[in-house]
Image (cartoon, rainbow, N blue to C red; front, side):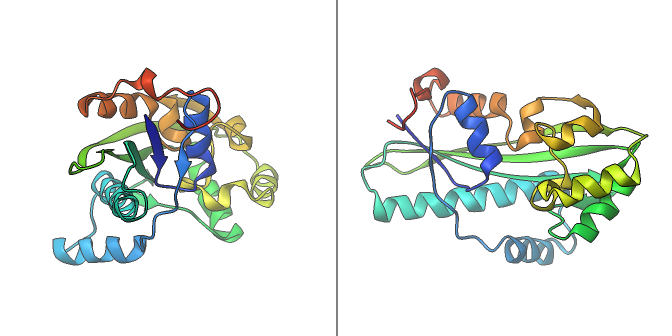
Length: 218
């Protein structure tokens, strides 16, 4: 059975590979800001982070499912979409993009605890059948060391790692040394919850171990 990751996130791709799955990665064509703005306008206010990450995960997966139906009508497998955001002190953070914003966030995060929200959308796709979707949101709390110095923050930001990840941190690379505790599925903080994906696949009639590969998609 084939697996398609509706993302070009290196962290999500790495997670699946470490879990024994070699997916095909397709970048979704989704304007995330526009989707979020439209949802906020319809709601009359900003969506809570759990709802927002699920909305974006579903939009990404749905876009790739539509394109597979056009370009690869014989695709038989699952499509996985995901999105992550970090909430701290009542504020929701996506990717910082600039060194200045990443440094500002780290000065705010040290000694604090926040929640990483990860939305998951999994579609079972088969030739001649309508796609079936299962969704879920996973959460994990992340505590940051109190004694992280300004010099360490500046060095971490200069590495470039925090600029393009939700919340401006990683737990599985350079940022891991500044994190003192994670409560919840650790893979949630990396980019997707593998245990959540396993459950969603099962809801769609797919056994997780059937997705394992020996280094290439099948």
